[in-house]
Image (cartoon, rainbow over all chains, first blue to last red; front, side, top):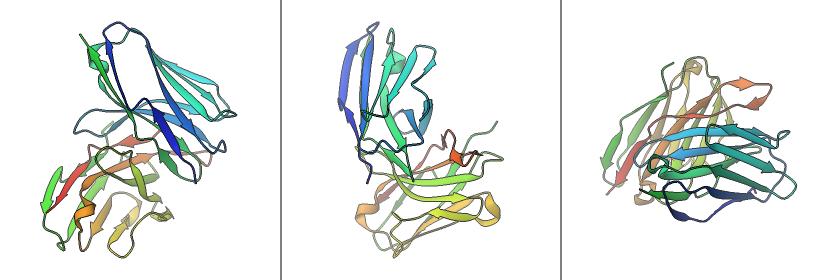
Length: 109
Length: 116
């Protein structure tokens, strides 16, 4: 069974700092890897989706990379802002979707 | 385009009672998912529909949970009878079906269930 782990569980950074969130998965036979953002009391918002044939995807200040051989994905956030404060979840897609437990990010003004 | 709609947003019931949640996916999306998210955990897939057929319900507690997607559009998830451990947020998501693989998932706001 696929297991998805996210480290760290919580992260607090000052505004303007660049940061990296980590996601690791045990089964490399995935179709894609997706990063989501979850705000308190709300559903998930898709940020980036990386197909298994791709190495990275970029959207604005966000860059996600995928290394299937090592079972790792990273989400890079440049020049963090207080509005980036949320929980970030990654999900690996194989026969079904497996979510990590998330990283709770706080950006301090 | 309109997003995924869910109702109700909040529900409080006593254990052993029944409850139902409703989801309307984005128009044209063939695939619909129900997830259970317990506080502090990532979402866990309960059931996946493709059109009106079930693709995966391996993690659905079938003794008390049931779901249907009539006409391949909106869907209902029912719990009967509810237990304390069913307290969670129930998320509905939908995606297009492209090339046999799933596309980006779009999530609704969720229904927060509290079982007392």
